Every structure is written in structure tokens, then in C-alpha cells.
Amino acid sequence: MVTANERWRRWGSGFKHIYLPARPSVREIPLLARLARGLARIHWLQEREGIEPDAAFVSAGRLTVSRHQSASLLGFPYGGRLSYTGDFVPIGLKPTGCGFLVAGLDQLPDPARWPDRCRDTLAETTRLDGREIEWDLSRGRHFVQVYRVQPQELLGRPFAAVIHCSGAEWRMDGPEGPGLYAGQSAYWRNRIRKRDTPWGPVSVLEGADGREYLALAGQAARFAQKRRECLARLLFDDPAFLFDQIHHGLDPAGGFVLGCHAPDPKADANAWLPLMTGPGRTAYLIRPLDPGPNGLTSGMRQRWGRVGKKTGAIGRVLPHGTGGQPGPGPGAGQWFEVAGVLEYMGGL
Image (tube, rainbow, N blue to C red):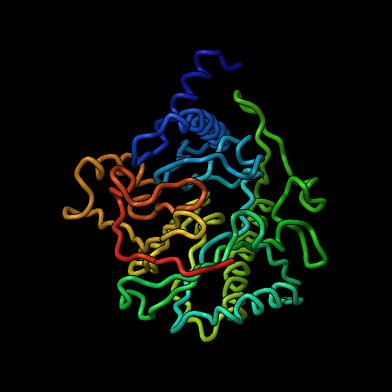
């Protein structure tokens, strides 16, 4: 039996595993309270497995309410990276591999023909890896937008297309196999285990079931990347794929990215990532500051150090911009640098 004081103490310890690189806004305070409770739940499950509680959340600068109600009920907002140790997977995070593809273009599409090309492409049946693609550019703030790159030499091409979409075909069960929305899946239904905590139950997949689910999420992420490339080839002539970054799904380094960029510091050391500011508006190309002596301030390095060693957070969590996250400015950009501007030219 956990006393009320112990419950409050453990909830408070959840705050110690949250990293905020910028001062939180008033609207974020309720999200932080729910996030601390969500981390306390994961800590409780870890203790039951004999694991030192290490679940942590690193914010990308600004937190917003997740569009997935199941994630919000679990306690996790949109705009950061969740990491933890344990042979279980919390249900409700829905890692569908949503992300941005940045493709370089030699020239802008012909404005007289491109609308028809887009309409015909989205109306035609397209199959990829045996699955019929459901183009979802009308949902979840998904889009295709074209920009003029400033300075032009930054990406090696004068123009760039940014494609934002996910692996929607992997959400539900289908002839190809189970879906990622485990709470709505007949395949996963009897495998889900409900574990009680002092802050309410948590539904999880454990052991081999959890590992199978993570493998499925990895397949969905790879499919989503190929899906974005497929759409780029259908809409543009000779696109050069510069980088593709998931911002909602499995983190290759472990854990989940929930509405942020979390680039691999080795594989993506020279990648410039898009920071979007809204439909039809200027965007930016950013990358993390070097956390060394000439990069982050000493205060920032100290704050990173509190969670960075265990979470691998240093230089790995950046805002992607959509969903109410900030553009470059005081406080919001202390841990990344802006190298270029994407001047909006059109999109759908």
C-alpha cells in the first residue's frame, strides 16, 4: 500500500527526469504535471522489474498536447524524446514513422501543370511493398511544400521540397499483418497487459510481445521513409534526397521521439533539418550546436548533463516546428544554429 505522501514524492521525482532547454510557458505547466505523472508510472513499472528508474523526457523547446488521446492519457505530450530501460512497451504512443523528407530540386515545378500532376498522383492507386498507399495529405498537418533555398549553395540545389507524412497504412490490422494502434487491434488485444500503479493503470506489451511490436514499428518507419521518397518521385522531376528525419516514432538509439527531431549524431552530423513555422510561411534549416566549450553555454551544458548522459540527449533533440513549436529566437534557439532560410514558393 502506497501512502499519499509516498505517491506525491514519487510524482515529484518525475519532474527530476524532465529536461526543458527553455523556460516553460504558462500553458505548458499542466502538461509538465501530467508528464511527471507519466514518468512516475514508467518508474514504477521499472522498479517492479528490478530496474533502476531511468525513464526521462527531453523537451525540444515547447510542449503541446499530443493529437493522440491515448498518449495524453498516458501522460506524454508532443514535442520531445522519451527514453527508458525495460522489456516492455507502453501502449498508446502510436509510433507511425511520421517525419520530414527534404529533397533538393534543380527547378521549380511548372505552375501551370503541377496542380494537375498532384491531383492525378493523389487520385491514382499506388502500391508500395505490397500495400496500397493511402495518401493522407489532408490529415495530421501533412503537406508537400516547395521552397527557394537561401543561401543556394547550402544544399547544392537552388530549391527544395519538404514532404511531411507518415506510414498511415500501418495503423490498423490488415491482410499484411497487425497494426500499430494496439488498443484497436484484434491481434494485440489479448497480449496487452494492464499494470496498476499509484497514478492509474498502464497498458503494456511485455517480453516477446513488446519486442515484436518494436520490430513492427521499425518496419513501419522504414516504410514511411520509402513512402515519402515515392511521393517525391511522383510529384517532382529528378529529386535529390538530402535527408529524411522521423519526428514521431521509434528512436533508432532507443526510446520514442514524440514530435521532435532526434538525429543520430554520427550518421547525421552534417544534416540540416527543417524547422517549419506554418503552412505557406518561411522555414529554416537548423542543426544542433556543438555541446563542447565553444558551443552551448556552461549553464546549458550543466542542465544537459543532468539527464544527457543517461538519455543521450546532448545535441540530439531539436524542434521540428509544426504543432506550435517555436521558430528561431531568444530562449528557443540556445541549443541549435540556423544556417539557411527556406523561402516559401507553394505547396499542397
